[in-house]
Length: 246
Image 1 (tube, rainbow, N blue to C red):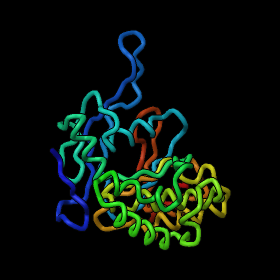
Image 2 (cartoon, rainbow, N blue to C red):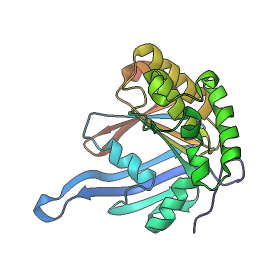
Image 3 (cartoon, one colour):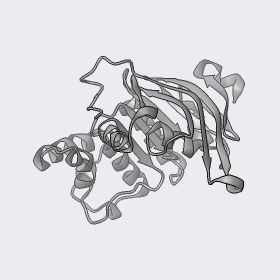
């Protein structure tokens, strides 16, 4: 079974490598291939923006990277762990300790308080409720929501709800943070605020951060842009080349 390899507790190389990854849905005449021999290296310590038109394979790719989906073929190494060789149970265990998610629709539980929502990942890991709630309080201070922690998420603005989601994703100190369209439901001001918090709080020398986005307003926050089209990586643009490429 894969163990917790939290970035604070390990000297493993913080790195993701995919080699010739393919993925199809359906079988036979109904088969639809969505990823074609995807090969990419993603280093830690940077904000990686994954961009491309709807239906190009972005969601499938991040689902494979996170171990939610299995590829049909290819190799995937995450932090020295060969993800393609793990069983489904081992992938679930890996995600529990190593992957944080921020979603477009927030996915907050309305029957729980803001603080309880943030504490959930730690309680899933078996950490005592009191300790998890104390850590959640600290995280909510980090996103400037300490005066909202005992409210229902429904009483928060959409921008505040997304900040709660960021705090929840980071509370377990994941080695991989995946943000799927985190600004799509936000206006320009809140979108930039959330991206600034992701940059300030999530970037870590041993953490990989991948943000899937269609939002042209937040491209300046990235360290590199990974372009996808028709199930393939078409180019990778470094920050130093943004001006000429965008």
